[in-house]
Length: 339
Ligand SMILES: Nc1ncnc2c1ncn2[C@@H]1O[C@H](COP(=O)(O)OP(=O)(O)O)[C@@H](O)[C@H]1O
Ligand SMILES: [Mg+2]
Image 1 (spheres, rainbow, N blue to C red):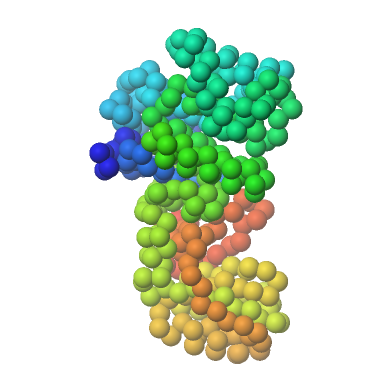
Image 2 (cartoon, rainbow, N blue to C red; image 1 turned 60 degrees about the horizontal axis):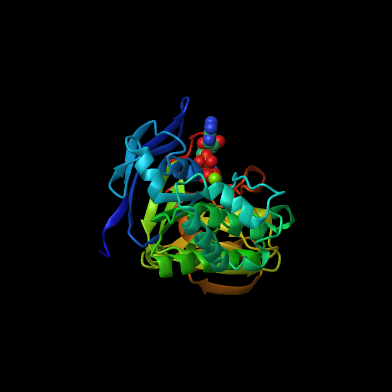
């Protein structure tokens, strides 16, 4: 049972006119797994989830969910799944319970079963106290929990969650993550989430597919993904320079042993390097530019480093935040593609 796949994604592709949003991806999700699609805005995560949940048709390829083909047996697939996405509608004037009644009636669930189920699910997300309150009065976190309850009304075997912590405060994010874990543990629900938050992927997912430009560029457990950095001859250095200048950053990026440089704060750089001479080369370069090193540390790789190492850019790279990376080892194939 443990290794049985509940989802098999085969060459799944979505094109919008000539633009390829999802580019022939392949992966399996095991029964009972929490699986994450991690990537920046525009990577194709939501489009993938929409295809898997039969809300959008693949241009090419398909996926098999619980034995059913999403392109041929979409009605069967829909019975097995629940989806939580940003664009879910709740009726503000209706109470929590009334909303769930409304959405529950869309499934063929007997009245008494539905009543009981709504109570249980509200208890599960700790909203019992608020069941007779209008949804319009709810916080973002409470609304998100309502969306999850709504997706669970048909007791799906697979729950798809599109950016479940987006726009939530840290406390609500923790609660949603805890809830997803509980649901997975207690009900055995298979969960597929998309996120651009490293912390979600790291704390929640059994396995993570890193998605960039519509492609899966890496897929493994968080620990194994990090090992791809620390296992190779790659190291991460944190370097504090008391007179840090843009020229120095550019010079460091120019070194052969340097894969990527990101600025952590005013004086501190996070540098991904490779090779046994890397430390010396970095120090020599800083000295040659009259930089004053106030501290230097060897860091454990984070998922962010893994992403940067593989793709050559940071995950939080919305247009205005994008930090250009000189990336020699992996970057070339990604350049010149439309974002
Ligand atoms: N309906 C659509 N029409 C045209 N382009 C779209 C449509 N939906 C998404 N896209 C484009 O496809 C790419 C992937 O989008 P999306 O799947 O929403 O990414 P993500 O969820 O990873 O941020 C983006 O470049 C987006 O602009
Ligand atoms: Mg999205």
